[in-house]
Image 1 (cartoon, rainbow, N blue to C red):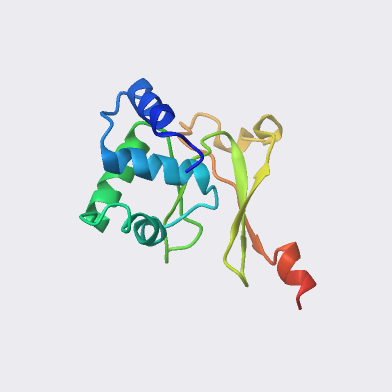
Image 2 (image 1 turned 60 degrees about the horizontal axis):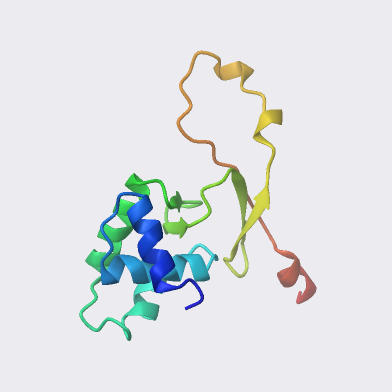
Length: 139
């Protein structure tokens, strides 16, 4: 994995997370595979390296990462949850054909929130759905 174990260990400690083998491997996987994987995808990739791995361990690790704000949950539809290591403000586009999720930059300062003045905003999420350029080329 390109994201080194020492870097992962340090990153977790900086976020008040006790490094364990599973946490390090999940973090490395997310850092090296920024395509917004599901728990199943993470499990399938890591089970060979960690034969005792369970999906529950991955869920628990991701819940901890969510609590510590080092991942975001991406739920474009009710069918699946994906995890995004990029916690900066950005939008997501999901292709209706290949189901890939792409990141795109947004400028949140240009968004008008006048209609919800006085509300408390905890999160901003921008999602688009359609057909990606790769799928458009092949149709």
